Length: 209
Image 1 (cartoon, rainbow, N blue to C red):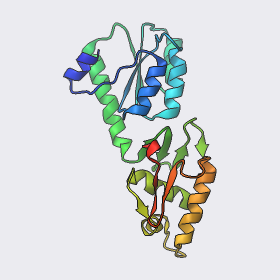
Image 2: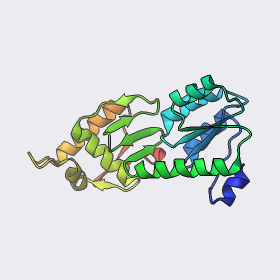
Image 3: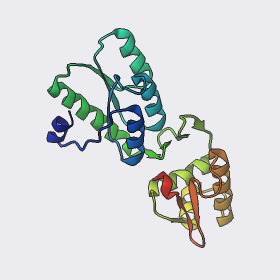
Image 4: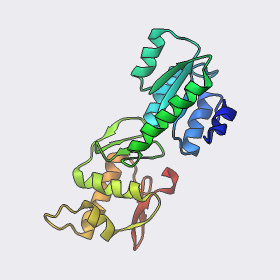
């Protein structure tokens, strides 16, 4: 399967178990996932549930069963597509390209880091467990700026621009207060998610990138 995909220009990462799949998800950037439900260490649908909590990449489920119940269960858990083995190679390639193309159209508004998922379009932040974290407008705008910067340090002035609404002008102290609130709401005290760069500003923790 990997050889077939690579001849079509895909860069692949292989995982033979659920544990390996989750490790690969943390190690590399994933554009799409082919998930075989026949795993040796965990039920495939259980892994699908975990994947959906950690990534928004499209998931195509591959299975030897063509039963409607399994298909519906996979779709209800967030699978984007479903193919039955034996897989017709040309069909699989077309389905995969379609899934990646659809994902690319939303990538500019969706950001992920170490399981955290931030969606600019819906203005929603989900933690690594898949739970929604409620943020006020300024808190979300500040975090969105940091996610978009992805590793660059943003000065307080740059963050002020991100949170300014044109009404009452915020101050540098406002940025520090918002960072403190976001850390509290995300349960990431200290430099767990947002790192303070003394005398400069803030950035996302390297461990989340």
